[in-house]
Structures are given as structure tokens and as C-alpha cells.
Image (cartoon, rainbow, N blue to C red; front, side):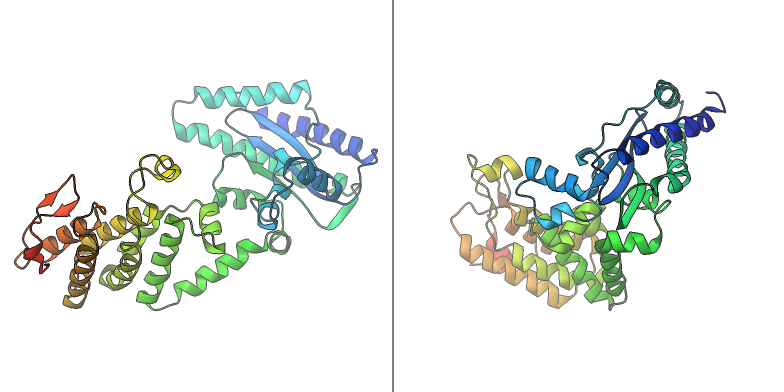
Length: 359
């Protein structure tokens, strides 16, 4: 690829953006403009110029999202700043810009390594950010609101990447004013990081449980937006070591007693499969307890008591796999006390309950 491509693209896109802004300023829509965005799919060489206004947002919400809640509208991931949802995003690019973008995309596709392709994608995004910064004087012609922002977004990027890209053209004060939920949650996680280890582990375990069971809280919304997964969170909890065992068993005591199986003809079965979200989380928690291994006698007694409770409640029923999982954990933690469990796979029940102190 020619070394001058990004310089040429900067010049060409500047002309396209200035034409778009000039066209918009001359229209009757130039009122209460709160965002100018360049939206990019760097791996396909696609760039969209977007302008959003209060009236435009209201029209989009009325026509396309009449039931949208405030949390779905505002914030970093909300409809308000989603360029494809902007009322004004159909400004065309010049033939020169399109050809240059095609040249960059072809270079990425022909790259011998992913790292080379990603480097070109990064260069394209940085070029767009440079364009937005240069446009500051031109954007002043828009009827801007007090919280007006201009930035670049990348399609399908992680939240961390999106934030870093937005911060290239938006000051910290403006970012915090427009996306207050990001700073608020960062401050909350900072406070959590200063808790005692067991309380810190307890927070992350409960957060992972809420995420797994789709309990809709502000925290689960943010974790989902940040791209956190239950397994990643539980793996991090395992690194706390023995201090995480008691909080894990706390969560296990709550989830293990909930229904474990979905009926084969239910909507839940189609969505989650054979086991319920709470049962799946319980089994994941048990896996982490085994991984930690350092389980003291008090917590061994708690596991045995939970097994007794499940056995008493579910005796003669096909309740689910958790009891057998707990029995296997007891065996692995104390093989000299608890023998290997014998399990009726079809009934999901222990065939040697007496070996675990069960009647």
C-alpha cells in the first residue's frame, strides 16, 4: 500500500465532513445538535458521518423505539449516541474517499498476520480521530448544545477500545458529563478493590451470580456492557484462594436449592438447555471450589449439610446434578473420609448416600 494513503484520506475525509456540516448548517434541522460522529468498520473500510439533534433523537425514539427505557437511551451504549440510529447519517462520501478506504481494506485482507491487519485498522481509526480534531472550527457552525461532543466509534469494538477512541477527541470533563455511568462504576470498582479480601471476593461472586441468573441490576448492565463473562469473573475469584471458599459456598447455598432442570418443551429449555441458570452457576461455583482445594473443616461441614438438605428434599425425584457434584467435591477434598460417589445417571441420584452421612 502507498505510504501516502492515510495523508490523502485525511484530506479527502475533511472535505467530505466539511461538505456534510455545511449542508446541515444550511438546513432547518440545525437546532440543538449534541453529537457529531464518524462511525467506522475498519476491517471493511466503511465510514459513516452522523449528526444527531434533540428533535432527531425524539423522532427516532418515537418511530423505532417507542418503548425504550431511559437506561436504553442514554449512556455510552445507548440509542442516543449510536450512529446507525442517528436521524442524520446519510451524508455521502466522495469517490476519492471510497477508493482510499477500499485500498486500506484490501491491504488488511491481504495482510500476512492479524497483527499487521490490526495495525492498519488502528491507523485508520487514528486518521478519523485526527479529522474530528481538525474539524473543531467547522463544527462550531452547528447549533451545539452545552453537552455537544464529537468523536469516532468503531463497530463491534470492546467497550475499553471504544472509550479509548472517544477520549482521543473528547476531554475528560466532557466525557464524564456525557457518560457519567462510566466514571461512577469505575469509582465503585475502586472502592471494592479496597475492601478486605473476603468481602472483595464476596462482591465479585454475587455480581457473577446476578450476571449468570440475569438479575437485572445496574452492576450487571455495566458488566455486560464491559464484556465481562461469568466464567472470567469466577476465574478471577479463584485467584483469591481460600478466602473465596466461604463466599462461594454462600452463593452455592442460595443457587443449589433453586430448581435445577428445565422442562424439555419449555421456553427456558430452548434458551438455556437442560439446566437452569442458577443450577449452571452452582456447578460453576463447585468447579472453582475444587480448583482452590484449600477447604477447611467448617466449609466441608457446610457442603455436607447442603448435600444432606438436597438429598432429603429430592429423595426419589429427578432433581438435578448438583448433589452428585457436591458429593464428588467432598470426595476430592477428603478422600479418606468420603469415598467416590456412585451415581445413577438417569435419575441423577446418589447410589451410596450412606457413605456421605445421608439417610
